[in-house]
Length: 460
Ligand SMILES: Nc1ncnc2c1ncn2[C@@H]1O[C@H](COP(=O)(O)OP(=O)(O)OP(=O)(O)O)[C@@H](O)[C@H]1O
Image (cartoon, rainbow, N blue to C red; front, side, top):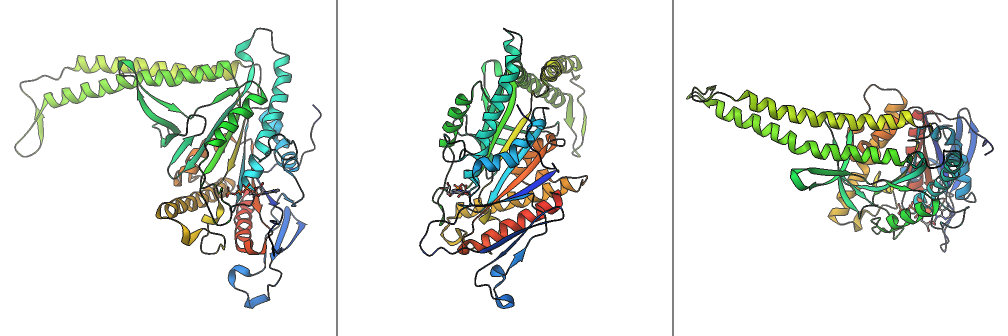
């Protein structure tokens, strides 16, 4: 495959994408200009009738810093966005790195159009996620072609995970919209796992978000389309299929050995649970029998019972044995990576179709659904607002190499933590989708201001 033309890859590039002016009677367009400057493009916005200092705060002209990597005009299609933003990151993906892409903008501005697209057949219009999947299959087919015949464990596939983050949970779009809980484990890692399943013998399994390995592009597209049918949608004044959730699409290069090794970790963890619980119960029981409360509220050894340390040690030994099995299973995952003939194994694209940015600044945005919202919608709006704020803070903290990155401040940033950490040598980008309609001026300015803050910190 010929090398693609590349542009400078910086830690976090921010792009602006103008959607076409909606075809509505009387729709007028804002004045927008862009100029190349030192370090990026500068975007200036004003209303056609903005009359200087007397304009209200939200209607005032505004200019960004020269911070944007590129500006896409309304005539630029999804293919052009794909080629300029996503495709150039393939060398990183094929080296096993992670690259993250976010679409940020107000309702109806084109986030879903950009990430997934509404026409999956037309290569010019299909969203960047499916275009990336298509190119991934082309790349891995070349590698699979050179693999030893019969080596099925090493054959590469593209694993798809798809979930939406809503309020404090993630909902698995490839597993019947199952609610998954976002928690930090004792190991400091974030686990996104479903309900607890109790199996035979007291085994307790909590399934992670499902990864569906796909062996052809057509298979992946079918799986993705089924998942899209489950996306929660609400209504808004602008766009009657407004997405009120953050949708995350992950494409990972996997092979059978990796999928099986990860499944084995989940199994071994399930086996550990009853033994861990038994060891704790034994310790508590022995402590309760071995100590008695004194009249002043303290504790003393029970003269009539000697703590059965052997019993405690035996239960702890079985628990330790199962902990070691988990560690061995985890080591096996690392062995699969180390033993793979392909350095691209584990390479990941993460695409995030963020919820509407109108929730980020409802006071200033003329498009916010505001007064028509139910109490539940208002609560969701507050959560979206705090997620988008947290995302900006994480990007800024990361870009300025702060020692403490506030991943824990929202469920969205908790879920994305692994991807941000995994993309240290990768690449991250945000596409700001904006409308040129004059009645969306406040929302558009807010989107570009948000992106400007991210871009200035990110160094695009
Ligand atoms: N750049 C574009 N070119 C052509 N059509 C576009 C473009 N951007 C958006 N549209 C069209 O505008 C409509 C709304 O776009 P889209 O669903 O992507 O918005 P959104 O930002 O995801 O909104 P929401 O947050 O409400 O889900 C769709 O019909 C989409 O096809």
